[in-house]
Length: 94
Ligand SMILES: [Zn+2]
Image 1: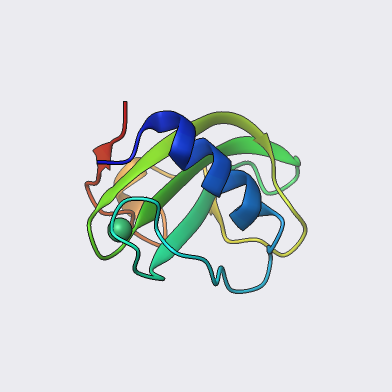
Image 2: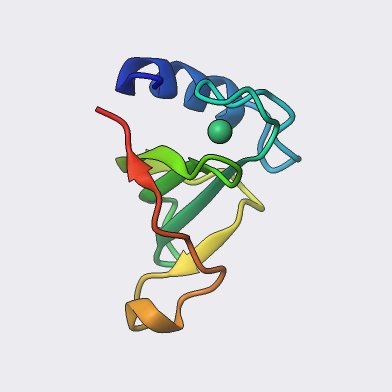
């Protein structure tokens, strides 16, 4: 299982590809199924990020990050269950 640090390194590479498609391999399973979804206020450029693999459902959370222009952002003012897109229950790397 990939460590938190490996996920963080991969996040850094994936972040640089935004708002385009993230075309790099999952540090855990090797599939190219990585997703980054930000949550924040639409009028601010700082929020938090969920970074996970849709194939093996592992990943990390980033507590405070700059949200790139045109990235996928969920509105933090909405109740959690109404935020889109949905983020699956993935296992946090340690
Ligand atoms: Zn994976």
